[in-house]
Image (cartoon, rainbow, N blue to C red):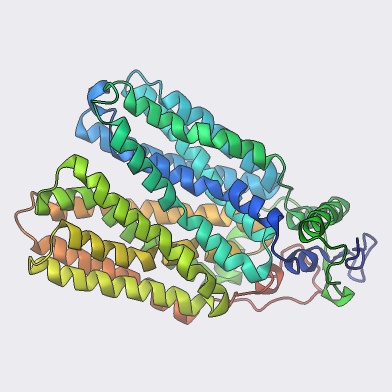
Length: 494
């Protein structure tokens, strides 16, 4: 194998270790190895979408004798579990490593979701819905970190955005399954919904096997004093890439691309707060704004779309699944189609475009909704177009908070912003549910749609003005790791 100069494990001029690990990872061509990362790690979002849709259909309500309030509470418990998991497991992923956590979090989800399918009552179901949510929340933190650190810089944007968008593939799968599982002519009332809870775990068993063969992030190893392991991991990845490409030669990496690092010790909360508030205040503002605005809009529409269709357009609960499939397809296609432009045209420009166009389409639909000229199909069409753009923008929010902060804090920072977005976004379903009312007055919901459009537009403008130009750049160029010795070149702080 011919590649770059071996990374030096001897002391550098600044007292640290000179490493070519980031440069070697970023110059790799796209191969089957990277597809294994996409499938093995990216499947988490499919599982989350599947979980939300299976539970949102509430096939267990009659069997367990639950009230509407208890059904709604189960959704809240799942979201609280996600916040808990993102915060706890995000910090663990930064201290213990990405691989240990993306195995652990998936295992927690698999076990908890399967046991939930055996629930005899509300309390039992609520407990295991919390732990299933915790597993998925931990996935959001650990997986985004691992993906961004393993994928070459020129592909990072489109891959991260596409993976986050596959949530809607899972939601569509859940809706399709519910059409059959909740049909009393096909499955007994106490059987169909239980089968639904096993779909994710069954699919996840194959994924957890695949994850065993995904390496630890060499970047994480590099910053934790495990340089020889980092080099050996990159050597192995390069060998796999060369085998996939049918070549024994990769582009050499010059020594002037090396960075000098020292082992990162335990990162205290004081360092985290100083990094977010003092060192990178503008980036913190952008990350918070993007996560809050997209979460608010998504929760507002997603958790109330069935109420809108049924109260204003008279659709039946069963037919709502078909309208949701159209909505989900629009959400899935947006990140897949628009994702490459985040790498070629630029992050700030595309974030603003997706947020702003989504807002504009939603505002137009609000005008037509108030004029009472829409029906269930055209209303769904407007949602689908709006969220074709909003889904790409929402996915870019996760990409943004993952790549604009130091590597040593990446997983837990994702967890913090995810939790913030979920907490603020949790207000939206209750607010919009009240605006919908009994469907007799369109005025309040029209105002709600204008509010959602305005919120998204503000998020896009903030990203355009204060965002970071991160397209096709190494993570270490965007943000200097905390473990880089003071004498090394550092990126501007903002």
